[in-house]
Image (cartoon, rainbow, N blue to C red; front, side, top):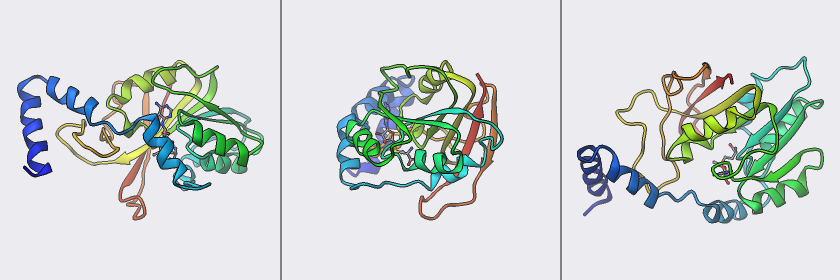
Length: 215
Ligand SMILES: C[S@@+](CC[C@H](N)C(=O)[O-])C[C@H]1O[C@@H](n2cnc3c(N)ncnc32)[C@H](O)[C@@H]1O
């Protein structure tokens, strides 16, 4: 049986069981473990990327000092980009990959880095801004992460994820990393503003959507 046929079969079983089969499959096929990310980030040497943070940085205030926690910071280059653009800001980065945090900490001295599994642990304190940059699409249930982060935000939670204009079901059956699809309506139940939807980014293979959610 081809993978496409298996996925089709799973989708049909999912709708017949009110989502139960799908939830089980999603848990069993989720590659986004700490081990997976440790290995992936170790294989990247000392650098991963910072370009997604350019979009986000447009929406942070230039005229005020602020504290910011970036959850899912990987090797820290995104935090470094923010620190460069906002030198007075207190920037922190968190990731559940200790490999990533060790590397990030050894590269950037003026940024605090901490090991944190946002599914299982709470951030250590409140921040003006919490950012989730290309991490939410990796969770089976992004809303539980959003709800938790909102408890640790004073001003706003900023989210950047791939944008998919329309879909029947946002929950993906996939052996890949992405588990969830996002568009303008994803956070309509929250106090949410869509900040922008970018042009197609060929290096990423997507457009990006940026959300601002107020606590
Ligand atoms: C696609 S990378 C994005 C990295 C960076 N934000 C960027 O956009 O370049 C996803 C990151 O989320 C981290 N991550 C995944 N699950 C996590 C969790 N439960 N708690 C904290 N970090 C997590 C991974 O280790 C990885 O560094």
